[in-house]
Length: 213
Image (cartoon, helix red, strand yellow):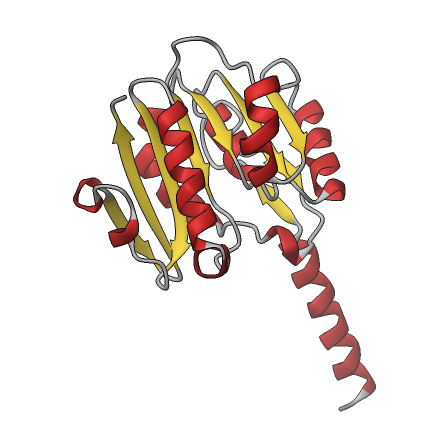
């Protein structure tokens, strides 16, 4: 490979890397605003087209709900939900450096009064901190997003199912749950599987259900 070709290849990789670390809010009052992303693959960002498809589906429902994103990653899903009319959000992310970046994004978007960023493990938060610390507005339905690493649905399936069921049991009337997985996970193992709306956006699969409690 020539010196010029090597330089061009390096420049292309640099551009691709820079592009990969830029995320934007797609719609709503903050549509078009960019948010920071570390590029760390442990926080696998949802592809823009999947996030857009998700909110084309659930966007009208998140208005006037309270958003809970148990595996926030980049924070893009929760911030998108607030942009589209959710009255507030709790975003839970176990990777501390990423949680700090989410908090920076919250400040840059002037959402400090609406969005709470929790640095910690979602399973631990569910079993311990939720009961003692979580204080959402009373009587407001929740929009609950479950977008963990896809392997969790295989390697930690029983924990995931317990988490989903626990959240459903605690949620106010009219709440919705939105699950993002890949094709390895079947909605047949979810409670009352016939009531779930399942959409595939390869490699992602979205599963949505409203629960009356």
